[in-house]
Image (cartoon, rainbow, N blue to C red):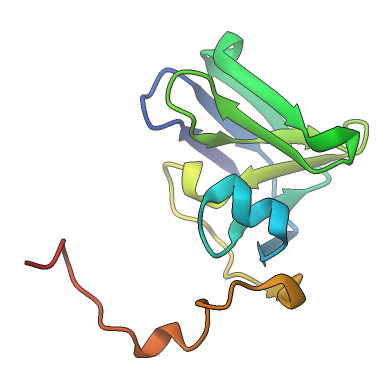
Length: 133
């Protein structure tokens, strides 16, 4: 499979060639800070390849305190982008940066002990097709 993606401003584009083995929603405190949301939504592959199509010089890789919690992002718009971890053995792709449909459903929520207190029973919150008036 070939998956294409980009950042919000469109200056960084990439392709991932191969298959994803896992898709997790991570609630750890680092992922919540990274995304500014309840969780990160990341796809994982140990066999795919990542190719930057444009804007690679705009990609910044941040390894939080050399802990292995790695985030890549566009230095112009701040959008999350794929990164390579574990000495090149793992590609982590934020699902939201793909410009194509994701073939997997999330396989689980991880680090639920760190879940935000407001991230509970969200299926009961009203949904709107656009910003409500």
